[in-house]
Amino acid sequence: QLVESGGGLVQPGGSLRLSCTASGFSLDIYDVGWFRQAPGKEREGVSYSSHKDGSAYFVDSVKGRFTISRSDYRDTVFLHMNNLKPEDTGVYFCAAPAFKDLDAMNFNDPAVYTDWGQGNQVTVPS
Image: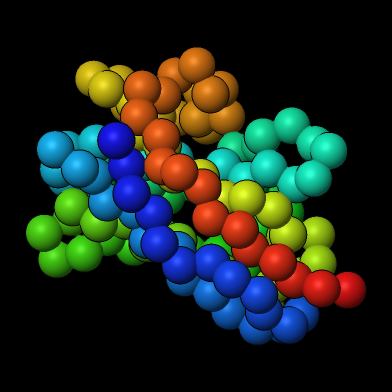
């Protein structure tokens, strides 16, 4: 099980940070994906972090505005969201796949993941 924190209400152009850690295991040997679900829309993959080399991937809609980092022990993953826009509004989830590496082709498939966070609301009013 993954535990998330962060999120909230922020004005356009503002920033938020989401964090994701695991209960019962450590994320230092797992890739971590981030999803969001806007009202009335399907859950979509936003980015993922590789545990092997620390690289990260972002979809075009957030590229240049969102970044990912890990804690010193790599067991907490942070999604830094800058220059937030109203279209970024939604519930954000972190997720980890057991025994599988993420790539640009599979990270957007919820079926790849075995553990999910509870979701955190991010609201950017228009």
